[in-house]
Length: 90
Image 1 (cartoon, helix red, strand yellow):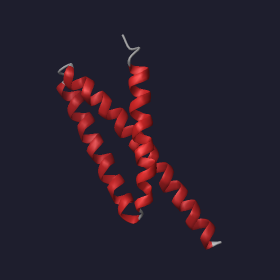
Image 2 (cartoon, rainbow, N blue to C red):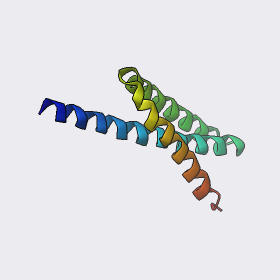
Image 3 (spheres, rainbow, N blue to C red):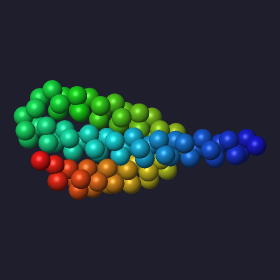
Image 4 (cartoon, one colour):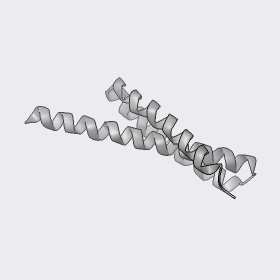
């Protein structure tokens, strides 16, 4: 029973790291767009949120280096999807 709970906990952290890194890369793309369009408040808020998410992810990496895997995949998917969908913006 304890082993099943431990495995479930790892899955939750794994998915959380993926989603968090996905969102940090979405924010990073928005940050880049905001900077190029000189929208200082949007860039500043994006930057703060990016660093908050990254700090939380680092805490997860300290407990298990395998959590780097969902972080890398989440980063790639987040950037790819945001740029692909964002290229169609007006």
